Length: 549
Image (cartoon, rainbow, N blue to C red):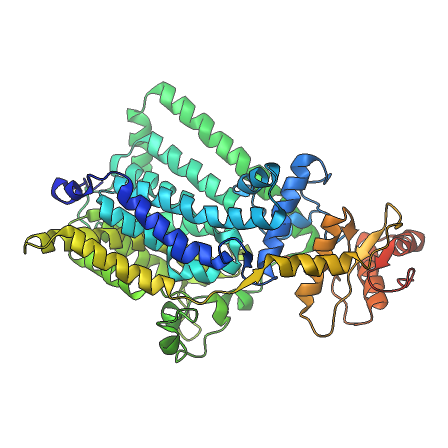
């Protein structure tokens, strides 16, 4: 690992003041404006509300209000529907804690959303310091990792927000490759496991990043010490490890394996039960294009240029521009810096780009998309959220080189830092984001709840029918939200997958409810009497009682 140069780090005598200032600036100018300073839900009432409902389900399960962890009352009566998407097990504790101290569901969601920025920043800063980057360079690198354009754009997909284990796993992995010590391999496995519990998407991309770092180290472009073949690396590691440490590491790795097995078993099981699989064409349509790395439609500064980039499928998922200042600093770090890990990061980043890039329909990614776990990953373009770490390391190294060079010309490092702060803040803060006032959501739920009579039977199943003037996901989430606050089950459902026969084509609300239950009855091979018993329990919100017949 590259050591921290004393001449550069001497400017950081202020301790944690410098990184704290960068973090506060990012929170005040970038993170908090997305929630209009805790007055609105970041994003629209689609995916953000879905994530909020999953978090609320975790809180209700902890309190004993929801009986089954994996089967919340959505898509009722299908089972295992939590396995249709991310579960937030690794980050939900923050939301549960905020709810436990008395905050509302909306405020707790905003708090959970905002906390991710601070935790990501702190962990990235720590990792960059260990990689030999100065306080100033680490502050700017962590700022890029936590507040760059791709992060802002993916704010509507808050399930991707908690990425703090990525820098920690990468740090331990690189330490293992450098020193060949078992303790570092164990740490990398632990942090990778944590990341999977935070987000399966990011966990998968983290594995690709670790593989890219391995390829980069074997390429030896940064003139590291020669890396032995993998089997010799493992043999040497075990040979030099203390027996007690081997046993402890083996126990920890075994526990990580068991935890991952418990996490993935429901996904594997219910994918088999419901026949879930991603079509290769669907995955191919969401692979990054060359133009994807220049898309920044939300940026006030770059949206004009971004608009000229056309013919990008799923454009809203392909916003992968890292920012001009970050790219310049990263280029300086990769080309000029003496930090070997920065050059390794540059090569690893190129490996990830080459692996996932689609050029005129050709891509290397199909070579791995049929491997376990890979087929479940639809939006490969989201890998940019993990690419930000090697980019942050390169940018931090670039800052260090610039500060060293400028000092040689009798300028002060603080002046350079100020210019960099201004450039980064202006570029990333000049962004248009969408937010929905929390009062709008509450009013919507209040209006729906007013349509539900107080004397419904205890086993009644709610169903909010689709509205012709609204997207289907809005009414599905309305039904899920309403059922949750009324402590009911609902036919409505919205997630990354849907059970077979779930959506009907008939816009008539009563017919829609009947067809959904017919699909479930056929799937479960129920008798006619069992099917009718289910139909009898349905209450279509806004319609006459018994209309589901």
